Length: 317
Image 1 (cartoon, rainbow, N blue to C red):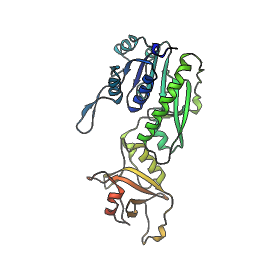
Image 2: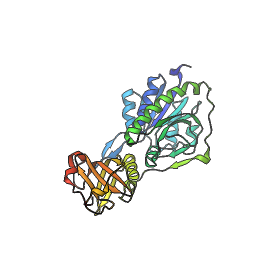
Image 3: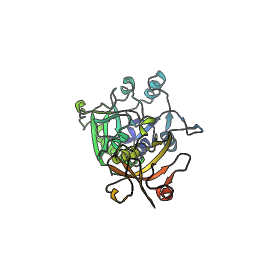
Image 4: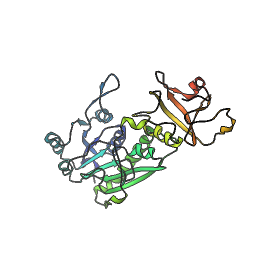
């Protein structure tokens, strides 16, 4: 197999897909076209911003195509004109229609950031954090017309450390996925891998993240709050409402032991139990959490070491 003779159309959107694309290109494969989502307005000023993969592809000198939909005749023509041997997707964010899937002679491969059939869908990384999983991973799979339902080619596990956040975990998964893909491709192209169908009875679906999912309250356990912060503090944001105002929380730590008996007041959920140096410890449901980084309404984003002294023990946050 001459890798330069394998013509690939690559599809993706965020930084995760950039890591995978670079690995494919560095391995010597011929990526003739990158398909990614359109530029979108970002931030309060709605600055039109290209997706990460577009920037990466242009740096690599690869042609970029940005359709609003892959279901149009234009999209079909754009891909079929490439006459690709293979389509590879990595966090593209759209399901490909059957006629697109039928174009490449070697089929279609997806780099999916979970251990399928667990976490099929739009938010596998956030979901594993929200659920407090200790293990995740990457699955290299064939694509079909379903949502991450295709047969599996290979997989690799990754341990989730207790305090890792979404961005860092995505970076780790991207490296795992890129390495696993380039290890899998030669055997797949040579026909030496037998795809393994997923067990639908074990499937777990996950759904798009919505802005309201970042809200928590102090009647939640510390671990549940910690999981929400790890999963959603990047977007849409993790927060608790205080008199209708959002207290945004960016980093937390579960406090395993705290002696309430030393305090001269009745402890209730949402009460500040310690506010000193880097400790801003709050009572939750049968547990305690340390707010390591936060932003009060109208204030700046601060580490607890810079603002804990502004809070009063025995009051509600």
